[in-house]
Length: 357
Length: 261
Ligand SMILES: Cc1ncc(C[n+]2csc(CCOP(=O)(O)OP(=O)(O)O)c2C)c(N)n1
Ligand code: SF4
Image 1 (cartoon, rainbow over the protein chains, first blue to last red):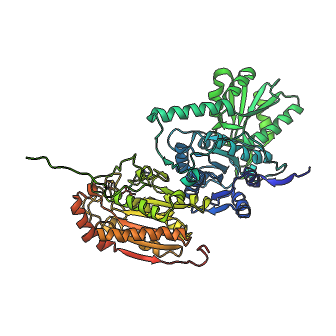
Image 2 (image 1 turned 90 degrees about the vertical axis):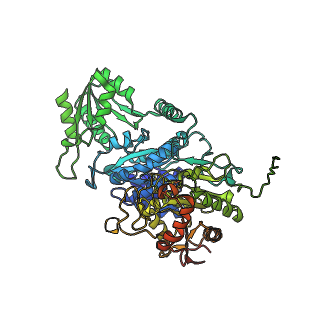
Image 3 (image 1 turned 180 degrees about the vertical axis):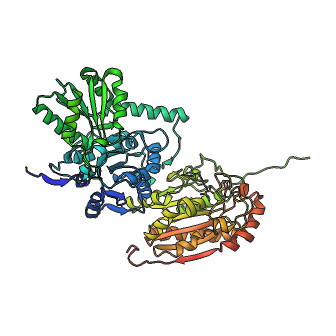
């Protein structure tokens, strides 16, 4: 218990970022992530950092870009409509390969949608909402502890590969409180940021010019071959997922984030009844654990995807499983209530599991 | 006929902060080259090149990124002042400047411009007013003069449809967080002297941590004005200055609650 604290997922973002040495936050308020901005506005001035409330999310995105370009560890957090506004900046971050970190606390639906629970931005986060065929690493925590840990991990991954890392949480994960151990994590040594714009005096008089364009040596093929190589290296090295009780499973649940929590409960309930269900939880949504889905799918033959969306994750699962497994979907229509408070409860998942076995 | 002896003598070295490996890629008669040199000279005279970080925009100032032997970024159209804000905030000891076209300042980036002045960001903006979108081929800009023909106002700019010319320097001067705002031109030697002085003052305000500083430059765009370089000078003298008066609109050494010290 020593040192442990009860905090919600949004505060865990802030605590994780501070442990990672993040000193600057640029953002614009939006529900359900306001607690993150409020946390930073309180804490950053104490450590000589900057909390700056921008004139909107387009500006927040470009401020994050500018601060990161200048070599500082900084971040922003937003929710779905704000994340849409950041796509232009994200595309410029991609071409200049700055190692930024963004937390997207998803809320439901297109437009203003609701301010409450939903997982309807999987495709936007994983396939890229901006132009130019870039990739971002997408981390999907499912507990407050993971939010705290993954925020630290995100800075490491971003700087290791010079890539944007998106931490995808949602209303439930951001607002639920759990007991966590706020410990700093240790990662490998990171490369020097010799590309950063800090003023040439700090770099022995050697200046750097960075143009937001395809200016790599080797022209267009040079730029894209470097990107392809980098994305392949990330996919090989960093793909992460968790499995639970899959050894003897006759049906495999696949779910991420808050839906993985409900699915985990459904697995426990099923096992008590002797129903052999397992869970595969993608932790990196990109790179997606294609191989694991394919292998487990082929062995078990029966997959049920659970997501609080019309069906986005299911596309990646189908593409990975191919013909080797039957893939079914329990989607947003399975919510217990037609209002914005609706949720897919473990009991509903269990019912679906039974109908498939 | 006897061959005339040609002797070469260096009368003026290029500024050392002008990266000689990259030739200036402007159209003939463009004033941007004069302004680029002026920025180099001012930065050198102020002794700030080691801590200066510069931004080009996403129009014809995009290539400015490559011209300076300074830490530079450019190539995005519009959000220059948001990016400059963050760079300055994370490195308060640095000197940050942003070159921005009139499309950027008056159209796509107007919000970023106003927000930066509202916050009194301690950055220096170099606003290039050539009364059109240069890069994209001479379309109407917010600064296009009334009646002026462009590729998107072929009958001349009509205020009933597109409103009135954009006065960036006056707008900036009206904001509390602005320490210095001036509009200058480089179309005559005398004006160049004044413009350089204004640019230097703008940087000095940033060095002293007073507040936001901006110099708007009237600048010729011969290809898109469809005028020869000499006619461009006349156009600036007779048409541009009539709409956009030259001078300082604000010059203060201290802004309460904002300035350093
Ligand atoms: C988001 C976006 N919209 C539009 C453009 C196309 N574009 C590039 S430069 C420019 C206007 C250039 O005019 P100005 O800002 O006045 O700069 P100048 O070229 O005259 O220096 C436009 C519309 C772009 N690059 N990015
Ligand atoms: S288009 Fe106009 S502003 Fe751009 S380089 Fe040519 S003359 Fe200069």
